[in-house]
Image (cartoon, rainbow over all chains, first blue to last red; front, side, top):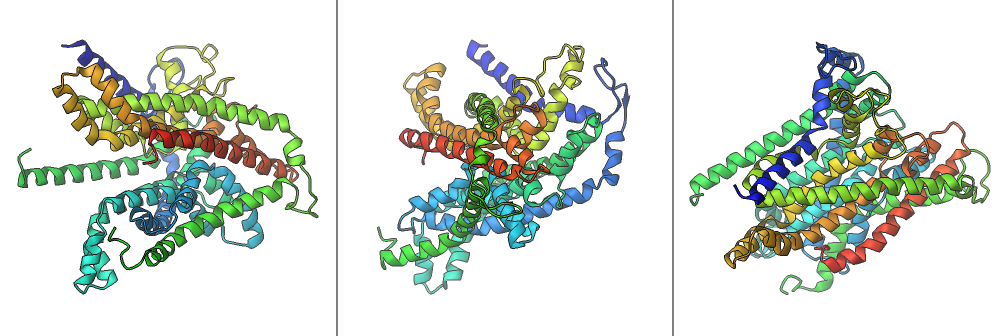
Length: 268
Length: 287
């Protein structure tokens, strides 16, 4: 075997370990009932960490995270689609300022924006949950806009023009000519915006004023106290497992579809 | 240029209408936040009592503010460097080898959706003095280095590097995989060996995407709260942790200081972005 192949294999193994390592203590601790130092592995395995899920309202918190993610996606996806159309098809007279403004949230610290908005909310009596969704949507917009912008850049606007010339209404032209080609981008945009809502901690705590208890908020309260390792691990796993399952499902679907296309189309 | 044929003004007007909702929401949220932080930090928007202009928010604990900047940079600079290096190596292996694509692609994809808070909890369980690392290596809690909550933000940096290296890797792979395949094949047809292909084809192709991803990682890690809060030491705190502690303080007079810390954090972010973006533009990463 050539030296470069051996090096590539070693590097691949090291990087798989790098990416996988932090998952290991989660899995071990989630099933450790008793694990005192210096034992390398738990002395007693069990489900103690999972027992507190019912008492501590982790399931409602997961549902709240899902609702928050869905609402953020519901706001940021259509807005990103409209902006992406304007930027991707160069419909704006001066694309510089809108591009810069819509990218700005990537550069700005979320905690700072949340703190600034929160001081005004109290005075303006705007409901915290609405503000929470809108602020998180602002942080999701750079991603949804970028995804749609790049999708529109790869699409020829002439298709819609031709559909219009053949008598289609604007809505029909968009629905028949453009929308089908946009669906993968729309899926990616929804996923990214959902993740912004699902993963957030600091904006939820600041703008939600501690009233909106999501899964990350419960993980944080468990992790900040000592001696809760099994609970922390169980909560952390519950927060990421739905996402990993979704990714695996999407990857499985795509590879089946690709396989089918390959079988039906040209030989691989 | 048939696209705007009926009239450029017409298409520009349509563009403005399409951009308006996203721009309006962003401008209102960011504008409200900046004005409110500006007024709060200068005493013009007190929680109670009459407004009184003062720079006390910035000067009362200016040492803490400066330490906050230092701590934030002490986290963001090494975390970004590590994330970019590990991310680019990941991308090289994913793009360049079947084994890399098969194992590393999914490994990085699994890290991407993990919330930073969950990552921080996991890294805490791995690296604290009673963590998995100490147990596996049989190091007594007293002799284990203070990776969590110690004088150097080791655990915080490693959490950011872990999560963000997956981000850099995936962004770079998405940006270059097709070009690398085509140009790499051409280069090897012309007789270039593996290392020369890497140096003259793969890495130069990856540089713009890696640099752009690196800027995003830097800005994110300099302004993120939860990882440093969970894994960092109590004092001195990086700006986000300092700002939020002051913001939630029972002492309402701490509010101007909290807003000042938030504004300094924003200034650091905008200053870094302003410095780096022109360089990125020259690299061609704007694409």
